[in-house]
Length: 253
Image 1 (spheres, rainbow, N blue to C red):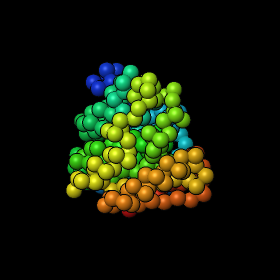
Image 2: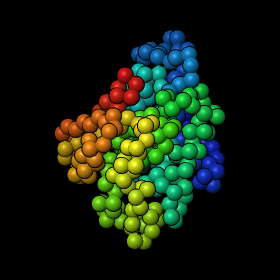
Image 3: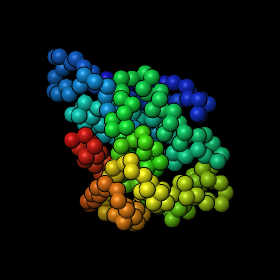
């Protein structure tokens, strides 16, 4: 695998930004301790989103995502999303437009990744789990699967928990519109014959557990191809490092 610290200009954000990209290297003869599973075609691509207190580097620093991705010969793109909840903010930048629409185009411009729907995936943790599920459903013509770990699954119900963060996102009254509510988005996306496969994972000791149960029940009411997994665990990297391996197996295994 190659690791790229990718600096580029985003028209959506109006500024320079950074993403980390791990991508298969076709020839690694002589490299010790790893198996090369790089294919000959354009690579499948996973967009992997960070949580509220993190940045684009966090998945690399807290997990072995590069090693896990090498097993499947896939590209992983880890962008910076600020504290935006991956929205086009009321008082801030257009992070939804950037992540969901502009970034895949830029990645295809510079890296050997596929533009086919069946080859594009999105996942994230906590705030990034919310972002991944939202983008995966709303942009289901471009993403075939979405996974959320310890997601902020009921943002409308938990808005007061994130009050200071959400004022720049949605405004002073903290009203979460239906277009940003995962429960409402799921109902709307359910009508689409191209709706993505969905994976949710959460720890039973996670403070986000109740919201995840609410969204789980919604997906189970609808006709999604839905996979749910839980186990003992809290809102932390020990859990996410374990569960991102389940996500990769579910997506690419």
